Image (cartoon, rainbow, N blue to C red; front, side, top):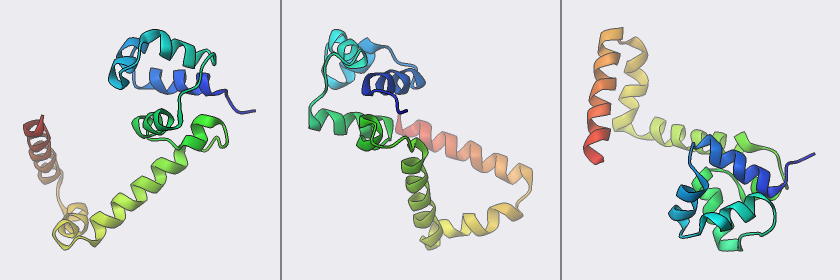
Length: 121
């Protein structure tokens, strides 16, 4: 049997390690509203449900209990990202060359990537 909406919302929120207050604030909602959602005393409207699904990277069908396939959406996104990566000639060089590289080169590339990511913050 599939979990009720509120239980799924609570589980997903806890996986992200955020409080009801933080989660509510992100969406402009009171902590008490999130609590009511998690106790199945209230349901979000369609637009908010879509925002929750996007935030947690799940489908609205998953949140509504129409499917228990949590991993499917993420797998589809991973497949699409890999396809874009593999088909980009400039990025494809990494796909082809990285497996042939030694550990030191891979470590350096990871360090450079971390620097780039941190610059965006």
